[in-house]
Structure formats: C-alpha cells, structure tokens
Amino acid sequence: MKLLWFHLMPYTELPDDFRETNPSVWVDISSRNFDPRRAHAMYNDFMDELEFAADCGFDAICVNEHHSNGYGIMPSPNLIASTLARRTTDTAICVMGNSLALYNPPTRVAEEFAMLDCISGGRLIAGFPVGTPMDTCYAYGQNPSMLRARYLEAHDLVMRAWTEPEPFTFNGRFNQQRYVNIWPRPVQQPHPPVWVPGGGSVETWHWCAEMDYVYSYLSYYGYKAGEATMKGFWAEMERLGKDRNPYRAGFLQFVGVAETHEEALKLYKEPAEYFYDRCLHVDSRFATPPGYTTEATIRAGIESQVGKASAQFGAEVQKVRKNARSFDDILEAGYVIVGTPDEVAAKLREVAVNLHVGHLMLLLQFGNMSKQLTMHNTKLFAEQVMPQLKDLFEEWEDRWWPNPMPAAERTLPQAFTPRAAV
Image (cartoon, rainbow, N blue to C red):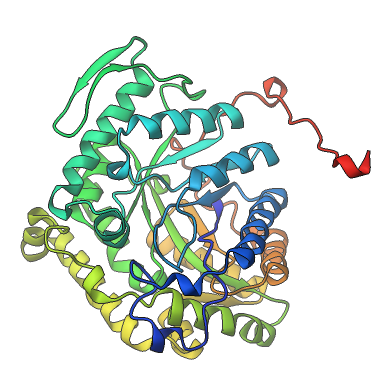
C-alpha cells in the first residue's frame, strides 16, 4: 500500500479561550489572532517537516487549499509544492488540491500544475476538490447552487488544455477563451493522475467512477465515522460495475506513535485537544449554505443505499462533534490512533483492510504539535510502522500513481551555499 504524509498547516497559537471568544475558526475569524512574525516560523517549520517526511521514505507528501481560517493556513498549496519539487527527489507530490471553481480562468490551474509536473520531473498528483462551503461560498463568494456546475466546466477546460496538442477555443457557460494554449505542458501523459477529495456526496462517487479518478475521503473524524462512507463508496462502485482495486480510494487518519503506550497518551493529548477544540470550531451557519448539497444527493439520501450511507455518516459526525473534544473521547471515537509502533501498525492494518483503501494519508502533525514532536512521530512511523504495512494490497496494481521521468534523466537542483559561507 501507499503511505502519504499529509500536512494541513494549522495555525498553532490560537489562544486558550479561542472557542469562547470567537464564533468560528473559519470565514470570520479575527485577524487579531494572526501574528505574521510567528507565521514566518510556522511556515518554515511546516516545510521542514514535509521535507523530513520525504527523506524518511513516505511515498508522497501532501498539501491542500483553504481560505480565511486558522484550521489550515495554506491558501496556495502550489507555492508550497513548488518548493517541495525543488527540495525533494523521488517522493510524489500530492496537491490535494486546487478548488477548480475558484479560478478564473481555470487554465491557471492547468498551467501551474503543469509547471509543478515539469519542475518535479513528473511526480505530481493533481487533486481537484469541489471545495468546502466555507472556502468557496463564503470566503470566495461563489453561488453554492452553481458551484458544482462551475467545477465540472473548469475540469473539462483543464483536461482539454492538458491533452489537446493544438490551440483551441473554449466557449462554456462560465468561461470563454478564444485561445487556449498552455505553456508548459505536463511531463506525465496524457496528464498527471487525478484524485478527488470528497466528504461523502453521491455526485463525487459517481464522478470518480465515471472518470476513473481516485476518491479520497478526507475524514477528520477518524476511521469509525468514515466506515459508513467508505462502505457506501464501494457499494456504489460494485453497482457501477467497477473492480474493487483498493487504489481507487484514499483515506485520511490522524496518528501518534511513541515508544510506549503511556508516552503516546502523554505526548499527543494536547495537540489532539487543540485541533478538535479550536481548529474544528466551525460555526454551523457556514457549513451548509442552501444549494450546496445537490438535489440528487438529497434525493439519494432518502431513496438509495448510497444515500443512506451518507446520511449515516452525517449522523456520526454530528454525534462526535458534540462529544469529542477531550482526549479520552477523541480516542474512543477513533479520530486519532495512538500507541506503540506495533499497536499503531496493527490498528492501521485493520482500518485499511476494513475500509479497503490502498492510499492511506497520515496526519502525523496535527493541532499545535511542535516541529520536534512531529519529526519524532514521523521518524518512528517510518522506521517501525511503515515496514509492517507496505505489503498490504501488493496483489493490486496502482494505476493512479505518478509516472515520473527516469531518475537518470532528471536534473538535480544545484546545491545552495549561503553567501556568508563562501
């Protein structure tokens, strides 16, 4: 199986009374909570952590896009990915991803992803999320009822921009361009592998099946809450006649590893409580704007097994949101898996088999976890957990993984020597 190291880049210094003094961590969070000088240190620590994960042997390092929040301070994952393309050599770079409906014109995404694929020598995974309502509808002002239509048209434009060899005219509902002719073009042909992050909507499952894309369930509520969604996904794949290749799917899980179980409980209590108390303090008025959930999903929720799975998931999320902000409840609900390397490996193996996911995305930094603890967690996982999981699903081919240029044909960045050291 593939093990991917995912970074949200949370703001790590929200005040202790953040929940009591701020209505939401997203959309209308006060900028008085943000210190640019402290963010300078955070960004550089976060990039060190991503590069360290690549050095430790993770199959990919992952970044993503969010806006106007203290949950993840990465409005442009492409900026981060460009530095990673230069500072790493073999690890895949998973940009998870660019919210297509927000780009005008969307050819900007085609251009920047093609740049990343060229710089990295063909190591890019291109993520195409529809985007959360907080990011798309409130922070960026999109009409929720038109968001998915914009997304689908933008997707078509990007794919044509990548694959058509000659300039063409695009005359869509939302985008009109007389000349579409992107330079550069992606190394990977016909295009980089496409992964679609989702939260359990019926349309996203159908979309991934139709286009043969990876469905990545980014669940921040752990494997227990994610079970209904992933089983609904696989039931829908079976109904559509797709095979059960586990590499069709990805799943996100928080993990903390330590030498002893007692040490793990001690080390990861504060970061977990910080994340679930402050980083997920989202005002409900921003979570479900009218029109964001499509009629098809609402209808399916009533009539089909797929919809029932989504509805069950929703109920689970509502349940855990109310209850799990203390560490004991967080562990009980399965949001975070902590323990010794053997304990964590056994649990992750059980989770991967049960959810049938070949791409396991791991949050080994969460909440206000320090750089030192993040690297400790990452190193222990790479050395003692990873070897116990790599054989899973080896009988299946991963058709959704980057196909980079041969290493001998790739250009290595010139070593940097600070001027003061010359």
